[in-house]
Image (tube, rainbow, N blue to C red):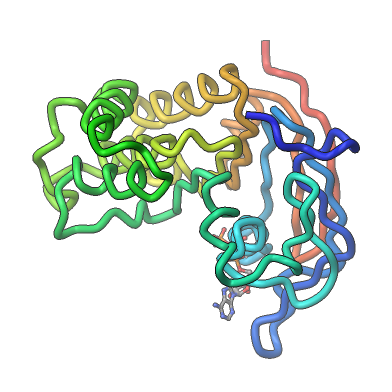
Length: 233
Ligand SMILES: Nc1ncnc2c1ncn2[C@@H]1O[C@H](COP(=O)(O)OP(=O)(O)OP(=O)(O)O)[C@@H](O)[C@H]1O
C-alpha cells in the first residue's frame, strides 16, 4: 500500500505541541518517518510516547503545529473523514482494548467490516489473521478468558485485519513473559518485512538493543535524540 507524498516520508511532524489542561505532554516535536521504517519511540514514564502515537491517528488532536500523514494535514481532516484516516493505521494499545463481551472472532470481524471487507470474505480474513498469530483455536473464546500474552496476540491480529500501512504499537511486549514477547515482536518484524511502517513505543531498552534501528528518545515531552542503534550481533 503506497500513500506517501513526494517527500518520501509517510509521517511528518512540524513543531507539534500537545497540552492536556495545564500539562505540556509534547513540546515542539519535529519528526519525519519514512515509509517502511521500523522505529522505536522510547523514554521514561510520562515522556509523551503514548500521546505522540495518539496524535497520529487523531486519537487526540494536536494543540499546535502540523502533522502530515501520507501528505495530508491532519488539521484539515473533517470529523467525517477520521474513519478513513484510521484505516491507514493498525493500533496495538498498551492494555489491548479488546471488547470483553465479544468473542475473539467478533472482536476482529468488527475491524474487517469497518474497512469494507466483503461479508463473504470476513470469516476467511479473521481466520487468516488469527492463524498468523497462532490463535486460530481460540476464536470462540472471550478476552477475559485469555492470558495477557494471548490477548496481546489477538490485539496484533485485530491491528492487521484491516491491512494497514502503518502499525502503531504501544508497549507491545510490556507485561509479557519472554516467550510471548518474542512471538509478538517476531510478528511485528514480519509485518515490517511485508512493507508496513512499524512504530513501537517502549521502555524496553533490551528489545531495542537486540533489534537495532532508529530510536527516538522523548523526555518530558521533548524529542531529545533520534539515533540509529546498531543491531546487537
Ligand atoms: N488525557 C490526559 N489528561 C491529562 N494528562 C494526560 C492525559 N494523557 C496523558 N497525560 C499526561 O501527559 C504526559 C504524557 O503522557 P503519556 O501517556 O503520553 O506518556 P508515556 O511516555 O506514554 O508514559 P508511559 O510510559 O507511562 O505509558 C503525562 O504527564 C501524563 O500524565
